[in-house]
Image (tube, rainbow, N blue to C red):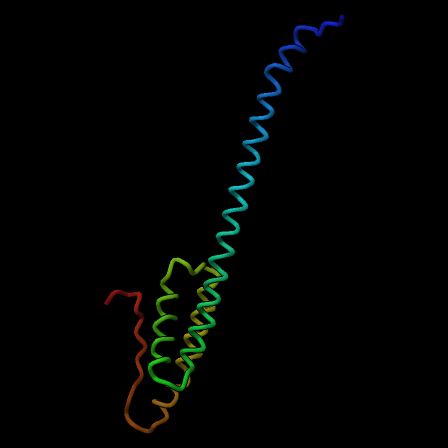
Length: 123
């Protein structure tokens, strides 16, 4: 019969559970990181879907749909769903949608001045 040295007995007795715990911990951390990345991707996907829909509504010929589209774009701009890099995209869409009506008003020949109000200022 062969016997293991005392250090080997301790290494196997304590090492195996410690390594199993460490493996489970690393697996859990990797799973949480993947879940976080998936959540960020899902939120961005939903944001882009709402942006496309609101843009289509905002450019509609029907006034009610256009107002609703602009309201959604404005709400999306303030939403926590919107990530920082996408803010410029929403701003560009809003500027593009509002550009034509502003030009029409200014070119109408009347003494009307278009004033853009920043809704973030709280005034």
